Length: 70
Length: 493
Image (cartoon, chains in turn green, purple):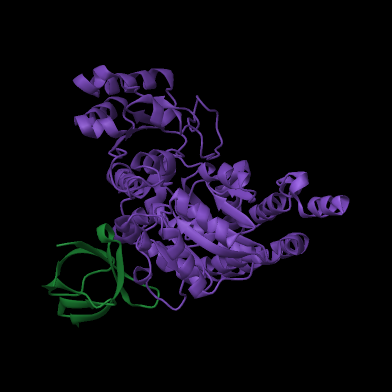
């Protein structure tokens, strides 16, 4: 369960950063991204998949979250 | 020598790798690459931040070097105890030339070496008592210090001393921040982990000291310069530009910096990151905790300076944007004169770099402004994200080498035959003896500053001074030069 830091890039895309792994990738798709549901499966720019706990509302970004590797 | 094609460069890498045993060859091959500007991600072509091979001559440092030498050391009004045997602190003392203002030994301590000088006895019985005693002595001898940091050397981690407990107790007694830093040299693969540990120590022990204290008056134009270590006065040359365009520089991390500046940084509006590798961690933390955005900038060479000033100004209002244009206009005639003077002497010269941190990619723009070309570059301790940023800066089919070994570097230089090599002091005399002009690019070969417009003039002068030095013509013995041999032939005939 790596701790992932999420931040917005200048062009509005979400960046997925894992310090310990030197991984900085854009998030290509997020399963749930609506005002009342956020999280689920994410697909990164390099094709790898992770899973975020599903939240009731979109969190304030930047933020550090736990993600599960799929 | 003309520019090498992709195939030639690949063949060169293969040739250099041939001397290694099979296993080493396989490992080293991953760290050497031919640049391909079409790639988005560096991990497709190069591997970085891995353990160096045993038996090769690596040029890397240790975690202690990353923490004490780079991040903490320049904070001038704190005393940094090199906790452990005496050598680590003594042999690195003042080597990085982080300039500062102040009276050394009274209110600033940058070039001094404080150490707990571990002996066998301390290894056997533990050094906590000694550390507590040292802190007491420091308070008596240097009462104007603003805090202490404990920079652990290898044995501290090995014998398991509890420096945190000692530090907490001392902080309570003196009322000043005492920061234990667990930067034992054996941690990680290079100094890079030391930077990270140092950043985390600042985050945990210093950064929140003034949370909830709003007595510091802020303005909408407050910025912090992060990752500028004031080598030869670099941070000052950068700071003047930022102040001229109307920004207020609240903190310098950490060249000529103080602990008070660091504590005030959470109040700024924008963090400006120069050395991304060593300080991005704290910038990311501040973005998350205090919602302070950060951007990277580059103050080497007029093209990149103008680009960076505009990029920074774009995040502020029109007043600052106009200020940025004014700064650029003000220095235009100055740097054009520098280029006019040195470009004819340096045009077309080829450079190979092997440095650390930000320089392998940041100085490329400055060389290009002088009409020079960087044909090979590499980092001692970069991570993937550094190479991501480097690929775009370098030309196609140029050499990239990560954690290059002494042997590989020599062979590359022999084959590529650059007009200038920029690397550290360990490489300096090897290349000078080979007859290759060399600049020590870690601390600007005892020159500097190189940042900003003022620094660019010095940079250009230094490069000219090195490359066009008449001594390079005298490297060959007079009877071995071509003209001498031709004359000898004539004389015999």
